[in-house]
Structure formats: structure tokens, C-alpha cells
Length: 426
Length: 126
Image (cartoon, rainbow over all chains, first blue to last red; front, side, top):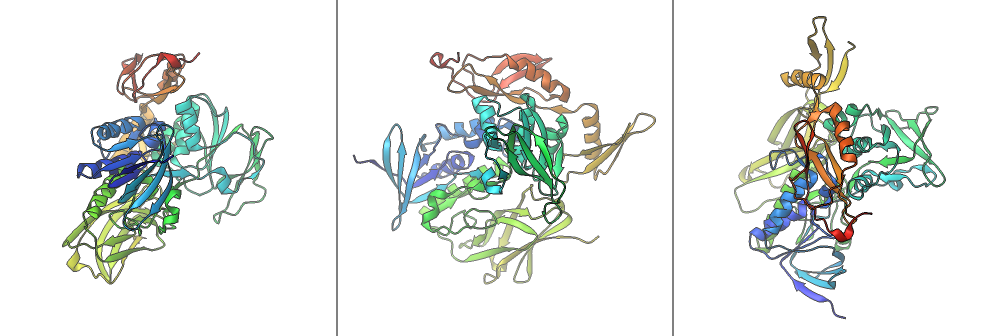
């Protein structure tokens, strides 16, 4: 059996908010775009995020996840993007100046696509209980926060009745509230770090509203239970994250919700020689969000984990526009590296490509490594200060977005940009 | 009244507020860096409001739940009241994002769909 052969200029992988934005951006510039999505409909993870707080930057209102998805899907339906749902990509091959993609779907069988550029909008995956060295038994009743969210909000089942939450990431906090509203008792949230990793808003509205305790510098170390989870052992850690002997305590519970971080997902392009940034776990990109492999772009949570969907949509638009420029032969010339110091956890983009224009303006997304008060963000180049901004406070959970504008004549192109945040001495 | 600790959520600063009531009944707020902290402490103590977001039983097997929200923010103590009223509800019909599914679920507050849903008789839950 021969598989159907299809051709388009741009392939977008993933129809979440990033992929939708990228596909529409490229389509609106007259390129032929195919959008492939594994699930049966568009919207991605927004569909299970029924809480509100989405879209305050983009739409100026606090929408629920499905409402934000709805608005974006309506835009997609109004475009000429060709979308294939329930379709899985099995292989991507790089040829001389194009890519061949094998995909399969229950309705259409196998198909092969020939495209000139690929935009990865595959989102991120949750770090699982297996990835954080939990000891003890392997009973049922251990869920990642996103899985618990899907089970409750989309399937309509309650994961358990007495729940412990490990990790204070936002989804874990939101699930603490969700489980409480649906009648489970949430015994507490345990966080190994000495500060919460979720947003203050979620600490207040998901925990404090319902009297759910948050335990910092305290973590789950062992699971107990033959078939179903019966209890967990928790333990205190010191400032170096070493366990404090004698602090063990056993908590009776039937469910453990794990909310311990998200990791950008790009398994399907791992063989193509893409270079990754250990800080973001996503590809190293320039301001067009193109990776080191010409023609492969990345956006949304596949690039780096965002706190706001508004930024995810923005990154999709940047990648979509840039993919069109790439196909039109607009190739940036010299690359300048952005180097971060110890104060910064991650930065997007990691490089800037200078083009023929005299000035450039681009958004920079920066995550600080720790909480700092009364601090100043500095960008320097060959000893010259290019940018400074003062902050009352910077916190790792709240991403900093700045617009960097430069006149190229003032940039020393042989030197990198150095980025740092320092607390100012008062 | 014992002093109450709270985090102001107006901005990323997240000021740790301490709120106590003086002898004359007025609230005293400390730890705030701006006037919004004082307003926040007053609203949070006197009438904290929250949007309720949850799901209702769709009546269908294929898409068992439909996501909903309260039309306005409600006092925190009314959240569980609304959850109870949703408990026995079954949609059993199609709806559009923005449709009112239960009107006056609490006072002037309606329950509104936050997604499109297509109901098909063939997939009715038993």
C-alpha cells in the first residue's frame, strides 16, 4: 500500500495555543500551512484548564482555559490552514532543502508530507513520580497534577478521597482547590524548596481560601501500599536540601498528586541534530525562534515553559512570521550570543541574529534564579550598557518580559550580550 | 482580634500583609508597599470574592463533563453552595460557549458554559 503524499510550505506540529497562533500567522502571509494534531480537536491543554485567569494581556479579560481555546479555534477556522486531527507523526527526515514527514491517522491511514519548514508547537510534559526518586512501594493512586486535572475535569472521576500534594507548582495548587470543591480532603501541599514555586495568587485562592496547609522545606520520600496507596512518609530538608534525621512522619492518604515541574517536549526531532539549552530544556533559538537546524522553528511550551498563555500565543506568532521570512530567503547574518550569569535561571532567545535592518526590537523572556528584592536587570555588550530596568522584586515563578531595542551601529558585534540581575544595596 | 497574615495579590511583589483590628473597629494594615495593599486587605477581610469554575454532568458518554463558570465573582462562602446546586444537574442538550446553563444559581448569579458541547442521543449515559 502506498501512502498519500502531500505537500505544503510549512508544517506546524501541535494545535494548542502556540501551534494555532503559528499556523494562522504563516497562513495570513499567504503560505500554505498544514497543522497536525494528535488529539481529536484543537486547543491543547487549555481544554482541561477550566479555571480562569487566561488572556488578561491578549484579550484584557480573565477567561477560562476552554474560553481562550474557543476564541483561538474560531480564528483558526476562519483561516485557510489545513488541519489534520487524530494524526500522529512517526518520523521526520531532513533532506537537502526540505523535510519528509511520515504520519498516521485512523481515518486516512499513513501519509507522507513534504514541507520546507517545520514549527514545533508540541508543548511540554509533566515530570513524573518516577523522575524524582520516590522510594517504597509502587501502588496505584499516584497521579501527576495534569493527569488528575484531566481525570476530574474531562472524564468526570475523582482520583481519590484523601490527597497529599507534592510540589507547589501552579497546577498542583489549582488541583488542591479542584479536589476540595469536588469533595476530597486535601491534607497538605509539600514543597522541598524554601519558597513556593507557584504564583502568589494561587497560594491565596487555592490554598488559603480552603485552609489547606503549605509545608515548605518538606517533601515526600516514600510511598506505602500494596495495591492502592495507603500512606506516604514525609521528611524535612535543610537549606542544602539534605534530609533532617528524625523528622520523618507518616501521613495516611489514598492519593498523591505530583506537581514537580514541566519539561519541553521534542522527542520527534531529537535525531535531527538540534542543540538544546540545559536551562530551558528546549532548543537554542535566535529571536526568530529558529533552532540551529535551518527550517526548524519552535514556540510555546516546547521552547520553554511559560506562566502565561498570552506569551505562548505571542511566541507562536513570532515563529509563524519568521518561518515565512525564512522561506522568502530573508536570512539573518551574524549571531550574537546572550550569556546569563548565576542570577538568572533561563533566557529566551539565547542568541540574536543581526539582519540588514538598522535597529531591532525583540521580546526577551527571563526567569530569575532566586527571589531578589530591589534589584536591577542589566544588559551589557563589550562594556557598554544597552539596557537597565529596576524591579521591586523578581521571583523565579514569575517570568520577566522586556522589550529590547538596539541600534545595530551601537552594538559591538564581536562581543556577546551579558545579562545579570543584582540586588541594589540600600 | 488576633492579627491576620495575608499575601497581597495585586502585583508580583506579593507583599506579606499583617492585618489587625483596632479598638474602634478600624483595620490596621502593615507590610504593604502601596495603597492597593490596604484596599486588598479590606476586601479580603470584609467581602472576599471569587469566580467559581467547575464542570457539570453533560449526560453524554463521549464528553462526560462540560466546563462552566459563575457569571460573576461570588463571596467565598457561597462557592460550596453553588457546588451543591450543580451536583444533581444534568445538561442533556447541546450548548454554546457563553450560554446560561442554570439561571439564578445563587441570587443574580447564573452558571455559564465555557465551551461548546454537542449532545447526541446515541451516547446518553445510563
